[in-house]
Length: 411
Ligand SMILES: *[C@@H]1O[C@H](CO)[C@@H](O)[C@H](O)[C@H]1NC(C)=O
Ligand SMILES: *[C@@H]1O[C@H](CO)[C@@H](O)[C@H](O)[C@H]1NC(C)=O
Ligand SMILES: *[C@@H]1O[C@H](CO)[C@@H](O)[C@H](O)[C@H]1NC(C)=O
Ligand SMILES: *[C@@H]1O[C@H](CO)[C@@H](O)[C@H](O)[C@H]1NC(C)=O
Image (cartoon, rainbow, N blue to C red; front, side, top):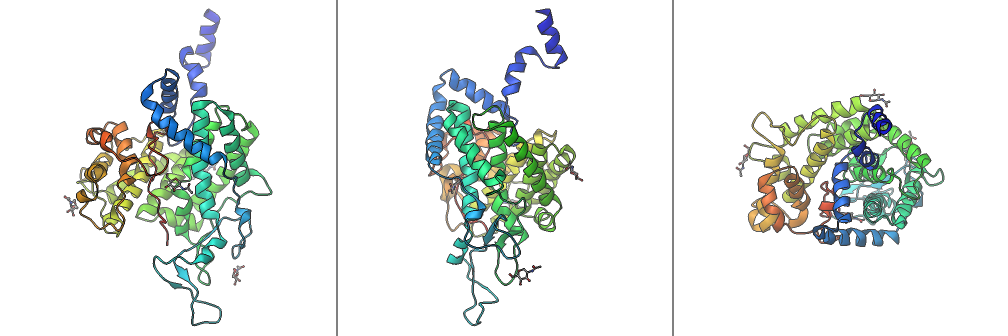
């Protein structure tokens, strides 16, 4: 007994916690302890988690029949790029009918040019993020290796196999032909969902069948290169300096990647910037004036807030508690969520701002996230939230907010 106690002391952890700690996923957005707790509750047969488990397994079963995806399946090579570069085309720009070469392209807002299908990478990448997240979580909770084996295959194909791997840059996102070979704002193609795959891999890293330590090492090396591009390339710098949701998503992504790859100085300094973004974007009554000014103000208010809330989850692991932070005018993340609660619960009648396509469940995960952190207004609203139309409400098993309504956010 004494020897075991001494070993536990040497390793610096209490023996009771040691078993649990080595299996706690080192997720960079989700709090890994919440995953451990949910799994333990499922193990005890807690019936309140079964509906969410049913939804998660149904999502994972769907993804078992899909993918893997690769950037090399596109039919067009990006200008100045290679087939291994990610590419997407701005959807609302069309060839000029009055010129022989179609240049310069002209904008028809909201009218999608079918040429964009020459670059299917954006849709493939969203499938990559959605699938690996659901599959890794389904493996974590059920222990069925078919889920982790497929997740591992998808991740290797997209990021790691030399034949099919994506280069670690977004130089060719949201291309407008004739005008450019990519744009900084195209980074949002990735940043809105990308951090899901970091948490998926952190879950697989707890010992998932099909995912090896060599895979884990290669994945981390890819991330380190991609982080260099995101943090220091001209496009990466421009996107992170945006004052609206583009900047929130870009900084959130950099913070999470820096934590994932172990660059703690970059992670901490970027986490601190969450305060500036909250001060500048959220008012004392919780409104987000930049997003309220848009034609899809409920969508964009939720979209930007999802980035803030995900950023806050990551920042807390770095010693920056944005859930408790109060801005100089009294602004808080909870107030920003509370501003959306009436419409989250009662629908469009309680949203007196412009909104072309009101989707009540756009707010569902943000309200869940605030409730989880102790926001009493949000907690009282949880029972009345509308579940997303597809996939069901799985927040209790995936305790970090997602953008649940589907929209093409770049044009
Ligand atoms: C980039 O591609 C465009 C269009 O294909 C071409 O006109 C231009 O010369 C290229 N620039 C470089 C630096 O290769
Ligand atoms: C970490 O980020 C800093 C910038 O804050 C950068 O200069 C440095 O190269 C990064 N370190 C590694 C190991 O990537
Ligand atoms: C919230 O605060 C902003 C900025 O002060 C103000 O313009 C807006 O009218 C307020 N909205 C409500 C609903 O109080
Ligand atoms: C990915 O998941 C989001 C919800 O989080 C959903 O809106 C979107 O339609 C999904 N897309 C694909 C391609 O699965």
